[in-house]
Length: 496
Image (cartoon, rainbow, N blue to C red):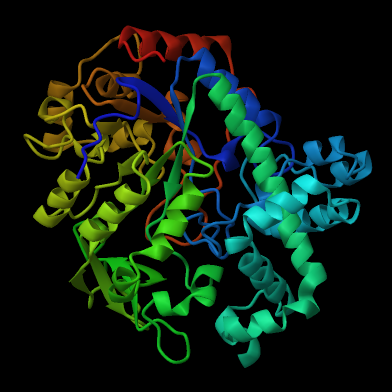
């Protein structure tokens, strides 16, 4: 397979910052002024990349990695001020949506945001641009609109609890006419989402900044993906999973991690030349410049747990046709720029798959100091064809991680990571990443702000509540912070 050695650039820097965490007076970050201001911040600090978390809708648990629709966008990210600028909302309606809390309150959003979106939709007059969008995206949009209309009809219960004629997608399509008006609302939400996101991406490109998106390996069982194509998953006659995804027990999680996602019917997918995956990839590269594929090791071998188990202890590993999948992908999309999230339980088959694809893998500095010659240590990088992270959305904030570091790991950190007495050790770790040979160095915004877990942790793996709520302070964009980051990026010769 053709090897990818860079992204069209070399030795650059970027920031990981979720859309949901951007400043906004409406309860959650959006594609409005906060997003455009952040792009200007990235430009002022010499960044080449902005990495976001998945932009898909969220549901129970609020995780973007458990979305009800892998191709759709999250309506919460639609900016209300932009809608008001189109004459679709009044000042009074905007005022009712103000919710300036320090954390994202997803329960409040669910109860309030769709209400105001429906008010805006009531004044919308379809035009050619809207009709072109609906036609262009019909392959996924029609199923999504019907799925959401039925979700509303059934009080948002799981689709497996719907009436038989609606559980079966083929029958439901024949009955879609009864839900056409509700489907129009969900089509419009997607039109507004993608129109606003396109403006954000265009602004980034003007500034020479690439967008890195995030593709979860699995989809949620309660999703349009499974409902509309159940044959692509290992389900029983009642459409329930026979096995679900997870991770085996380890030193950090004695029961393992039980994710609960249905497992793909890889045998069928292989026989269909991975058409389901090719459509998913097509959608992803329609909105991102670079895609980080989550849980890359699952494409070499995946862990399955019997459906109904309460822990992941009784799971087992199964082989996956990752080589065939990515060779098909490379033929279909030869210019696709992909980052492989090759963290976790990495075996030789995963290493072989990464080598075969040529995708850059990830180096996580939080993992670098627990072994004498860890492959995550910059001095151990065999090639620049990798992406180094100071931390991730799943990890401790670096400030807290440093406070908890002890024993041999602390000794290695002090030995390996150069100390600059003029700054906090969080910035020493960031500089450690920047000075590596890695093609791209990524830093979560929380690390640049030197936040603790209490202030800025985004997600705790294996927990289903209380995550994804971090929001940045509206006054983050100071001259001092911009100069501090710019100096670090330019000194390490990573300026865009």
